[in-house]
Length: 418
Image 1 (cartoon, helix red, strand yellow):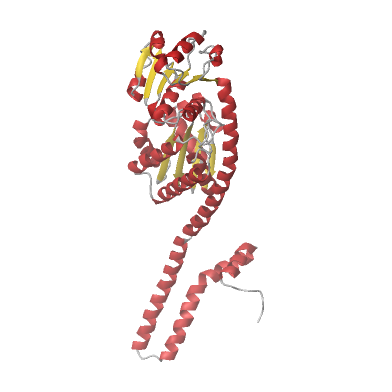
Image 2 (image 1 turned 90 degrees about the vertical axis):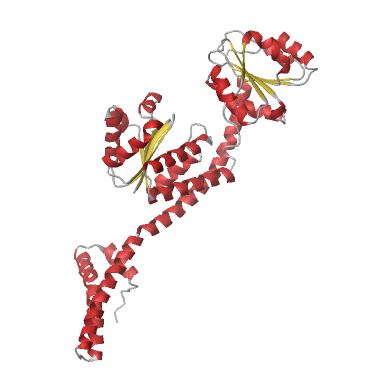
């Protein structure tokens, strides 16, 4: 049985998610320990800031998984028992596809989760806790998730302040490789803005902050130049894109400074985004020609429209996932009976071989060929039908009419009397 067990941003607090997260450096040992303690052959663990999920094949109860998590994480079972979810077989596959395609993400359609779940799969494979069942399941999940993203626009419309800012900038500057972007601040939002700018091929990136301490990570991660806020007037004329998000209580960029920069730029357009609350850029800047100024409110309207567009695409994605999960269920059920079919045929072939050898011995002893053939047919028939006849009789005595009906279907029997 396939199980997808976990907690996420919808079911558990950030504190509990933090307690249940797993360090990548320890993941291989954790997987192998879980394999032993939970008595399962195949297991994979996905651990991100928004979710911890366990995917496994085996006969293990949710309570057993909760007990294991509580033990290794040093938390109370009661803390887990009210916030977990657990899906089995087809429902588990459906959930895994929704996770991998970004359908179950905090931000609908976000692409990072696909890489995270694929990495979790590869780590488990390296640890030896992925065998045939999980291998086939994950490959199917990845295939469907790719189809969802290629056949729908679920991830194409920006729905975060950072991505929306960069998306709008790319509409004004068709070639970001020739543009100079300045980001002001050093918080998480600005770091994400810088990441999107680099991913979109920005030509030059500069980071301005009150101190250079926090900005050093930008130089290491994004090859950005660093300046102090006091140096802003010196480079403003070279800046095409400016995105600001600081904790300042007063504006740090006024109309006069931007007007002077525009004159030096010979009125080449400037794109400004003020994500800060209170505002970092004076509202009067918007009065200047050749300036495109967006505030966090403007972005929220833009994001809301994009969320609606993504939700519309999500309906198409759900239909794709539903069709694919149905297909997986049919194929999986077909695979599950292969072992039974093989065993059934092997038993029949054993009976056949024993009776053929007995018949050949009888022929060697001079017994009539017709008698041997008749005895062979009768003996094979009796031995093949002995167990089914006995079990059918018992089913009738116990009133198990479903077994009787299944028998009739298997052997093409009818209720007609000859």
